[in-house]
Image (tube, rainbow, N blue to C red; front, side, top):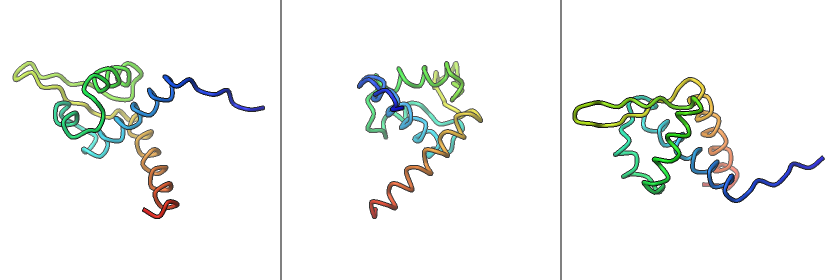
Length: 100
């Protein structure tokens, strides 16, 4: 039995959401400042806001908002950390096979 194809929208969402988890993980996984993550990322600002909320809604990240100076920080939850570590492993395997 073959797997149904994912829609282009679902593929894009999954890819960007995974990329965001990896970027938070690479920033240390805790108290990662949203503004700096966006500035250093290849993912657009609009996508960041859309997907970090989605990731938080599903329990992959925790959003911490300071009232002053109004900064937003992102923390990986245990669930998010496990997924990010698996993604990092997959990324390493692919890079190794490609010879990078």
